[in-house]
Length: 87
Image (cartoon, rainbow, N blue to C red; front, side, top):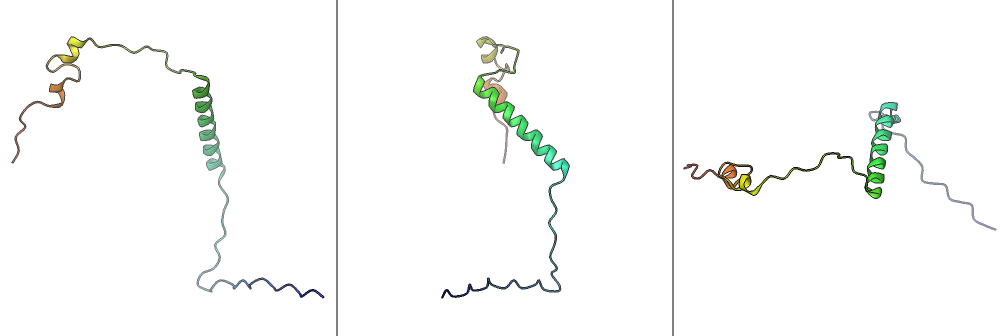
């Protein structure tokens, strides 16, 4: 004859000073935000896989004479102006 199944470990009730806290589900607003974020990621993924480009403007080129002139567009002198003093 088979042995009777042993009962599962008994679950002790929580202490009186620590009552169980019921868990609430996600609100509809959180579900909406998660859905919108998922949809945006899906559109971005599909656009990347299909090679869609959302930019309609072309990039402008800056001539080398403007880039290399002192104080010009992102020149060396823009980042470093010489001696700055110090202690």
